[in-house]
Image 1 (cartoon, rainbow, N blue to C red):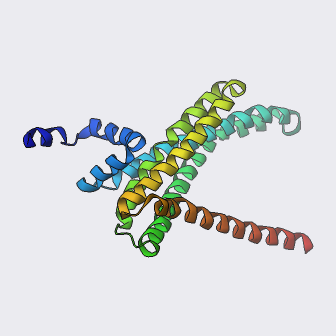
Image 2 (image 1 turned 120 degrees about the horizontal axis):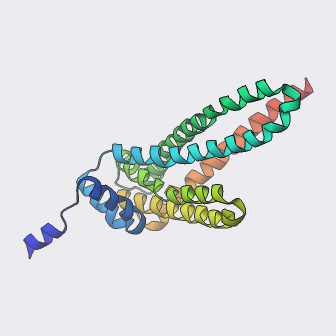
Image 3 (image 1 turned 45 degrees about the vertical axis):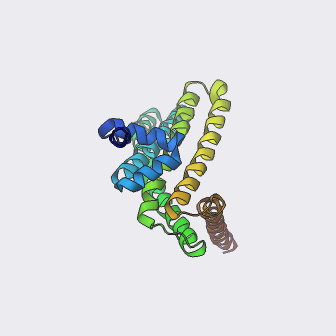
Length: 230
């Protein structure tokens, strides 16, 4: 029986194991994260997931932007001339590149900062036992639900009026499931209860980001109003 159990619990390797971890992060995050922590997974796979999922989102945003600009710029033809308009439209291909890189960089920053905030809260406030590196790895798998966002964006690009409502539902599902995965990651990594994990992974980071956003807005507003007063 022991040999049989060990054979059944033997982790899959290669592409099959990769797909299993993706599905497990969505459907069985507690068990999946426990297995990953036992095997000490590396950082490259979660890094790859973030780059792929958010890179695709950024590319789609760029494509949508190009489509809007390309159609709206046609009205400027009598003003700037047909040749200059064609040259400007030809340079729009750079927009998806810019949005893709921007989305990836922003996602990586949020990944690192969010894991850091959760680590400080779980370890030093709730006296958890985990490590930042381990949490950072698990946090990378919280990007898997963003595949629903990608699906919603693709459906919206096909027919905005028909699929917009469905896309919003998919985005809300992605946000909810991302929070669930983050909570489970902190709970598993630091061995704290779900309530403490929820505070560490969602409430405290949300407060920090809202405070930073308010600070940036105040600085920007003061600069703009100061410029006008001059």
